Image 1 (cartoon, helix red, strand yellow):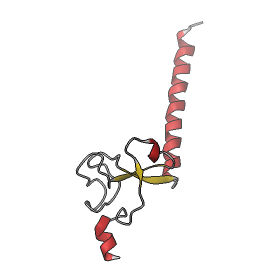
Image 2: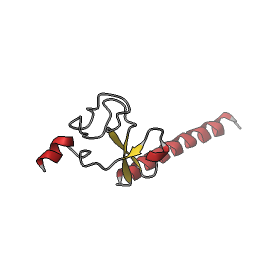
Image 3: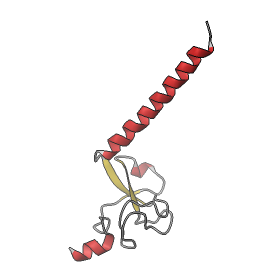
Image 4: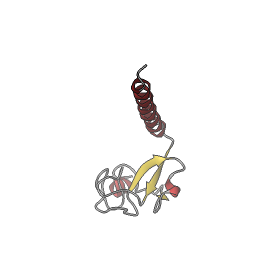
Length: 101
């Protein structure tokens, strides 16, 4: 019996399981079980508007206190610098959308 074949199959099964677990986590986050977390986004990686930027991908500095990204619920306050936000300017279109409404 070749001992490398079971090892190969076990490794392959583990990689597939890890991939499926990651995909499941992303799917759960996409179903609306998320929260807006400000102060952790890298420059150009924010999800949508602030009082200083119009929309997604327009933050000019890392960890801008207004720039936010969606994270799975319950994780924002566990991240260093993360702060939950629900400010009116943190909607699609940023501060410009608030002024129109």
